[in-house]
Image 1 (cartoon, helix red, strand yellow):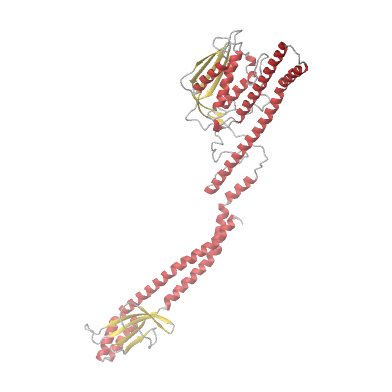
Image 2: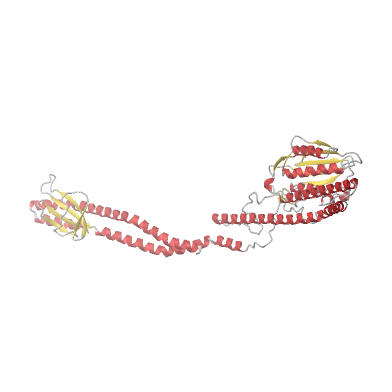
Length: 521
């Protein structure tokens, strides 16, 4: 049953019931007011005829018939529609005019307020007044002013019939009004239902737009991850990936439902994006690992076949083959670790980010690099504290690969590498530079070195170290580039990361994170 029909039926049932209940409360009040009005009329009639009644009683007590007749006419003129009965002191009825009970009916003898007298199924309201012919009360009598009590009852019954008539009329009228009002009120709901019904779950999900302080930007730019995050409680009017926009209708309940539906679809699309991204990452990881592991695995197989085919191999040759096996094993382990780390960076979520002291992290990683490369010399120049909003494991990965790259490729001839690390905060950015005295990188190759599996012929690494650096820089809304140190020789890797700003909008991760899935990276 439609909501408008339900509302119409409820209105048709409730409104007449309310009318009847109001009538039940109103009828006793109306009856009481009518009786009070009738009693006031009796008092007014008694006051009007009382002077003539006194004169009538006095004329009767003195035996003056003509005067008595004159007073009777005056009483009749003043009685109007009320019944009047006058009795002498001895009970003799002197005057009986207007509607009243039969003479045999017993009327109240004691004066007081109006009382009800029933006679043959008919009720009368009777007001009793003691009348004195003189100031001393001698030759007195009794005055009764009366009227049918059923008049008030008839008026009350008429009111009751009108209440029932109004209740009967109110049923269809309230149903019609309720239906019209409900139809109008549910128009936004029907519009919302039609729009929601047109959504296709199989349709491709559009990525959420990312807007930085200076406008839209790509994932690698400084503002690439600065905007409104859907997971951080995106607004009710934010567009969902399926194209559903919560429009305001002016009806609070409908607006709340529309906003909840838009938020639900936005979260659904976000989860769908995450799932698709995780599947793509897993497929790319498998593909890249199988492709890159083919060569070292073949080398391992060849060396193992040699050892198996020549059990009497000289000790020197056997030691050389075993050393090659260890190198291949190390290369395999490094490659798998780097690919796993790259995939981890593609799948990290915003809730893993927090305030990190980059200066403390840089000093700790420099000390760790010194332990891993004991022949290299590391010098760190950093202020007391430089805080960024970042993913601490990712920043450690970036620093470890920056320092490891400088330690391996920063040697000057046969001299061990001397690496200088500087960290400073300037113009809203944290500037990190890593200088070495190695051969450097030709300007034509400086962009290519950040691609996956790009390495020199003599490089012992997996070719993913600087790719991880570029990935983490982009993930933290920063940039990385290769330049030449001020001395003119060697290599400088320069990383810029944005510093937190109080006036900045909510942080969002880059819309595109495909460092392991994109074939060209």
